[in-house]
Length: 594
Image 1 (spheres, helix red, strand yellow):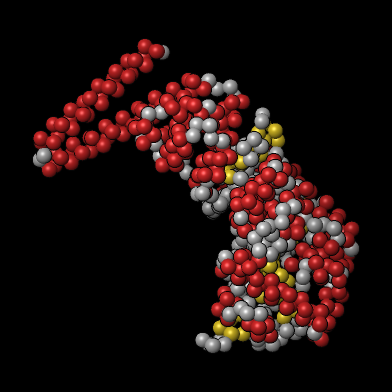
Image 2 (cartoon, helix red, strand yellow):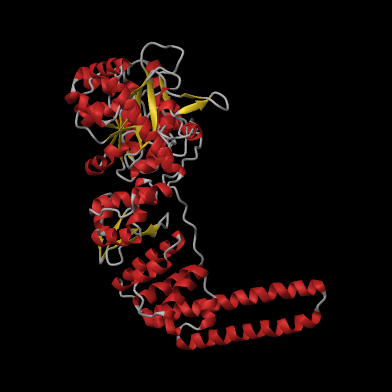
């Protein structure tokens, strides 16, 4: 495994890998960008080509190598990241299938079950009698045969155990089939298929692995839901999955906008027309995690939802959340009572492209919608228009934009701006807690941690300085820093790559090394006076250590006072006074230097 990793790293440059996902700009010897893992306005994400590492110095404080980056950006585990990068590097993994089988995790078992189920459903569509009818129906809906094949559409037969029996025959046990969300337990011995008599749409992760399914009822059956999804499983979580994202992600980045539709067929038909930067929420509300995934690729959203001002509250909340997290949101003026799939089928591909190109900014869309079918000379309609728009205007955070829309409303309704503002003041907008699209909160670092890291940064520039650190000073450092400095002390000419190989077992250590590697290069570029910075770090660390010692002594003295151990107190007071005296002497010495 280790040789595979080294071979991949030797063939791939981290700048090429990262820039295939996000736009990088040169910053001295490094590259920088807005971090794809949290919401930020100022670029704090740095990539070091010299060290082959990346690190975010902003809100998430994440960092690592190419494997860690692909794992986070794609939302996959290490074995999958290894496969992705091996394919990109043209490396044939030496690990044999039998060895993979031995280390197979529960997640891998679920993936295998879903993949086998997908093949079963595909075969049923192609070979069964009802499957032929389903295929004919899909072709009439406008789907081409190559589209049906590329999206791996299938059919679940209207039998109780068709899939379950097939999977059991493939060697999977009943418990795992249930865990994968493909069957339900009837009793302790029997299970039955979750999907029966349905057109099957495989749901894939960002790495195009099948993790679940949506099933649409085929035929007339009013007793069952039209659409049915797998329940949340180890693989599938509806709040985290966007249908078609595996196929759309690169196009979203290249076009720098994402078309968001509601249904699976809407998404597929859009791709068929050549509008590939399209994904679907697939039967759920837009969540902060969805937005976080989309923002990795673009901050521009075009919504193709059937919307009105009364609107679906979940949809409106999703839009407000997107706006609050820095998205530029536009809305298509949909053809009445037609979803995107029907627009493509009945109005043509050009109409679909035209609607996307003519999508309006969200507030312009709401403004035009409020006037639709209303008479601006009617007092009642004026009141309705104002009632619809003022809650929207009140949420606009930018004063200039808010003033623009109030002025536009005033002009169109022939009402004084002052009166509109007075009415808007009466509106009480419920305070909503919007979640950031970042998944990780940055922990604030103490002054001691910052000083230790600064000292480590300098050692990566000039490792010979490690000999200036006394043994007791090393013992006073935090465990991770102590581990790195001890390794450098044992071998002052150790390379960064060797440090990473020897010490980089934990995510915390990987983070520390990637951060220090890039910080040391930024220090060199900034031409910081290393000698002064080094002396400052050591001096401040010494002061913090003595302050900590005084604090500990003070606590022990107080405790001994309660216990009446006055003989022991005398000795501790002597040590405490010596520390204070030493501190005063150091202050005088520093004062002379200044």
